[in-house]
Image 1 (cartoon, rainbow, N blue to C red):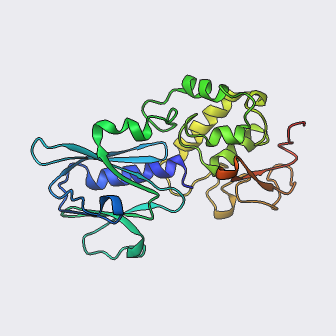
Image 2 (image 1 turned 60 degrees about the vertical axis):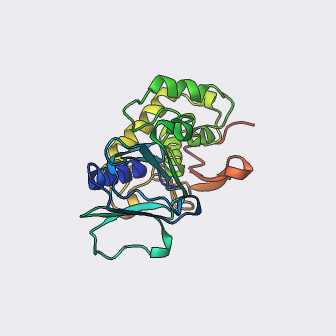
Image 3 (image 1 turned 30 degrees about the vertical axis):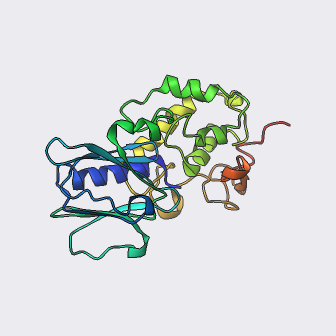
Length: 268
């Protein structure tokens, strides 16, 4: 699943390509909005909220304001093409197409596509915790929300977008490693939760402007991560083979990676 910095970059891409421009056409390839037509509307802007994207448009004149709410889920992506450029993914994967005179924005394999009144955005993102890359980032509130369930495993808590918004599997694994805690460690057992949250923000901030994410500081292909997707490879610190297992509730299980030596499992 894309991380918050990936979604942030997608939002910036759409914002640069479409903001202030009039839509010459739109194509919603999802049943609930198959007849929607935004032609003639002006794109006000696109913002990211955690892993959600909100593209706001205004109808001609003093028309209604609508928000296109999209979520990449596991395989989604937004791409922007020149009007006659060949798309970089198959057309059958397209879920939304927005056209202007000089650009075609295509949302491929999007997990969520909703067209809602702009004043109803709170109904789709109001449940989220503080956004690590948002202008309203609130460290104290994020810490308060994490501490509400002190016995919850820190790996699960970091993935819960209602605690803080923007952390996915990769950052969860990397954050637990640099903090020296096993993903199953209870929130209350994390030695310095404030430092962990600050590292989360630092990691996303550093990576939000580049496509090649790195938590080690090394941008070489096989050197960018400490533990994520490095199962059975030696730990970069102690050479112990990296372990992997599934964590979380049965309906939301995710792969977690850790070093058994640097991140010993909690007692019991």
